[in-house]
Image 1 (tube, one colour):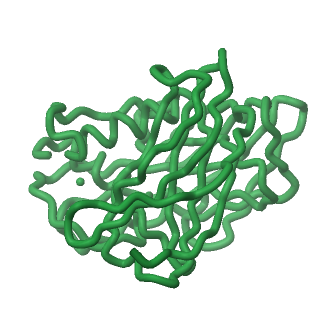
Image 2 (tube, helix red, strand yellow; image 1 turned 180 degrees about the vertical axis):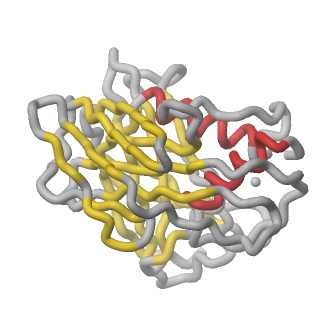
Length: 263
């Protein structure tokens, strides 16, 4: 996704986020059960969801028990507070909230006699211009390339997700900041597993503009789970208080759907 009990719970959070991906066998010790909170609000239409689960020891049965009966609220900084309803075990949905760039959203969760809070500010949207392609040098690999203009003079942080014929195919974590490319036109290859990118399939690429705290979480998570093999394992700096794992993200969404070409 290493070998300490801290990383065991960390990897649990990552597997929950990428739950539709293939099962990965990890070399992990047993870690104490920990609450894992994951939520988002976007500039697209709601409802938005917050999921609350309990981490488990590896390798119990690779399921993550949902936490029901929590009190979950999101406020928008403009006087509106939405109390979420549990729509399925451990999944809580908004009712009236609409994400707006520039607003700071605060998540409040009361679960298992503990209070957890998180805040995230939704950045301004950045337009995703197009998706082009790069041909790899190994076994006919091909990679999608998002193309977009980074706004000058503003710190921007991005996350990318890929969906093939409606199914998520992002195996790694793709985050990017403009520290070395502020104001430039960005063409950044998504070096994902391309074995399923068959000619004629429909690929949707989503680009999120995320805040710095959420970027730091996923960037550190990427390093801790071994995508960056030069880094030492460490627990990512979540924006959720009181020792919870996970993240709360207010972000904008841009997407493009393209047909996989023949090379």
